[in-house]
Length: 124
Image (cartoon, rainbow, N blue to C red):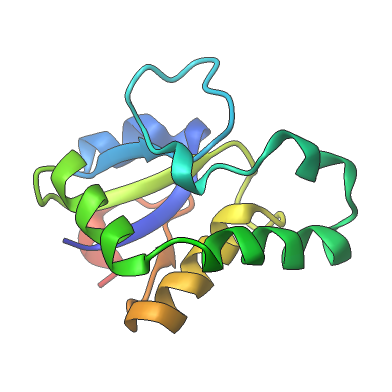
């Protein structure tokens, strides 16, 4: 199972490419798929500037067991490749960047941003 990140705007492309889409957003207005709230930012984070937000969110991640998170995502996706979704466009700071760094640090997993990908094979 590969883990990648992306945004809701490209969900259809990801699904068509064979990924299982999993939301890690706090709210899911136009998404009615699988949600994984453990990686969603808490409501109060939004009021902080990026420089303060990062350590707060990293503390949240450090309270989680990365191996358990990986295994839960694997169960939710039936072992398929996944894309962790939220709202921000590619290139804009977002908590999914911190999730990718955390998974790399904790499990050695390289998590790439899909962006406006055309073919799954282009990435790996």
